[in-house]
Amino acid sequence: MNLQYHHKPVLIKESIENLITHKNGIYVDATFGGGGHSNAILKKLDKKATLIALDQDKESIKKNFIKDKRFHLFHNNFIHIRDILNKNRIYKISGILADLGISSLQMDNITRGFSNQYNCILDMRMNQESFYSAQNVLNECSKQELFHIFYEYGEFKNAKKIAEKILKERLKKNITTTLDLVHIFFIKGSFKKRKRFFARLFQSIRIEVNNEINVLKNFLLESSKILLPGGRIAIISYHSIEDRIIKFFFKKGIIINKINFKTIPFKMIHKKVIKPSFQEIINNPRSRSARLRIAEKT
Ligand SMILES: C[S@@+](CC[C@H](N)C(=O)[O-])C[C@H]1O[C@@H](n2cnc3c(N)ncnc32)[C@H](O)[C@@H]1O
Image (tube, rainbow, N blue to C red; front, side, top):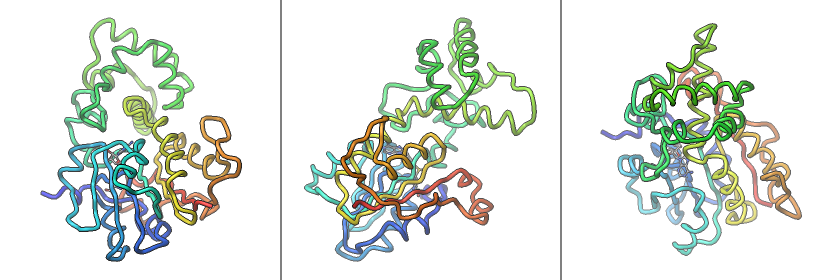
C-alpha cells in the first residue's frame, strides 16, 4: 500500500507555483510527509535539478520514498537543515518549502496518540526515536510548565485551571491514554465548543512534545542563511502562533523578540496570507486552517 494517497497535500498549486524560480535549481521540501508536495515540485523541475526532502518521522520516510534520480530523502529534523545540506556539499539553494504540523498518516494512526478521536496511548512524538512523549508532559511537568504550555501553545485564558486539573488527576493515577485525558475535562456547551477545546488541548501538548515553536524559529533563521538572493521560502502553517512568527520574520526580520538582521532579509511575494479556496476546504476539510506565506530572499 502506498500511503502517500492518504494525505491530501494542501495549497499545492499556490505553494509550488510561487516557489520555483529556477527549474534546474536545488530545492528543499523540509516536511516530506506523504510526498505530495515533493512529487509536485519534481514535476515542475528540469533534469538537472535536485530536491532534498526531510522528515523526522521514520514511517513517512519508509513508506513514501519517491524513485527519481533528482530526489534525496533524509530522516532528520529540519532544525538541522543547514548542516544536512553542508554535509552534502550544498551551501546555497533556490527554494525551500515547509508544510508544518502533522500529516493525515500520523493523525489517523491510532498508535501515535495525536488524535482525541481514538483511544490510544498518549504519545504524539513525530520522531519515534525521541524520549519525550505526551505522557512525560502530562505526568512530569510542573504546574508552571503546564501553565506555560496551555497558555502559550493552546492560547487558553484558563490555562491555570487546566494545569491544576491535570495535577489533581495525576495524583490519583498516571495519565496514559487519550481517553484518560479527555475524561479529566467536562466541557459545558455545544459539540463544536467541546471539539475546539480538545483540538487546542491536544495541539498544545503536541507542540511541547515536538518543541515545535523553537524548531520553527531556528529553522527560519537557518533558511535565511542558505537561500540564494531571489530564492524563495514558502511556509504553510495551521495555527495562529506559527503564522504570527512567520509573518513577523518575513515582514520585519524579527524572531525571539529581537531584530536579527541589519536589513530585512526578505520581501513578501504576496502581501496577504494565502488561504485554501472554498472548493479545497470542501474536498479536504483538514485544509481549512492552512495559511501560506511566501517570501523572497533579497
Ligand atoms: C503536514 S505534513 C506534510 C505533508 C506533505 N507536504 C505532503 O504533501 O504529503 C508534515 C510532515 O512534516 C513532518 N515534520 C514536522 N515537523 C518537522 C521537523 N521539525 N523536522 C522534520 N519533519 C517534520 C511531520 O513528521 C509530517 O510528516
